[in-house]
Image 1 (cartoon, helix red, strand yellow):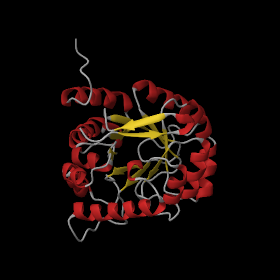
Image 2: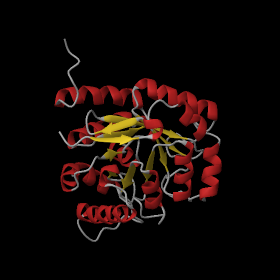
Image 3: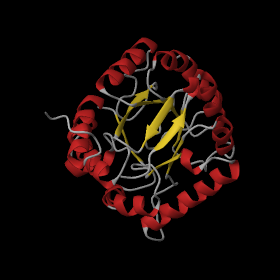
Image 4: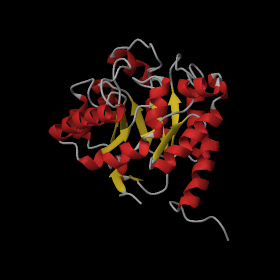
Length: 283
């Protein structure tokens, strides 16, 4: 069993990572996300879906106001905040579990944390916006540091390249005053990688986690490499997602970021009982 980290969140609540495997529910309030674009692009529907995911067992809710689908055109922080302003305050008020803000812009992150968000989820691992590490340090919040790069060319072993990326992110975090205990790593499946590279990184997760003994989040839900592997459209990738989640759980990931919360929570709880991360539910 790896180390357990406990974070103090807004209102004095705490969130612990490193015990039972947790499921993070995805809530995209965007019109163009790759798998559920527009589905929750209505404040009432978004709140209903948040409650549904919590009831299904989501331990964290990840809220994003900008699509990061392949080929997306980044919006400005002002545009992102304007979109989130219609949703985020009410969603945070309704949430009974920690809320993370999915953004790579420091201004958006600072605004969201001021509204009461608990966690920063940065798909560029503190390396896109030079102020992101400072914002995370000032708010003393957990930050999810994801691997990413422009393009899919690697001139060295992909795991070695990812380790160098994370070393830079960790240096930026340390320079800003972010404690190592506040950092969660994410291999960035679906970002800066071909389908074959995604599969290799997933297969070699135990190696990566051993090299970098931090809490790890895995986000594979409905992604294109699953569709390519199984020749299935985005609407039919739940089983493929589940297989990647179970492998990631066995590899040592602490948090699984998914769209289909209810079935993944059941699988996670069963696997945790098999592996001993969760007390037996047997009599």
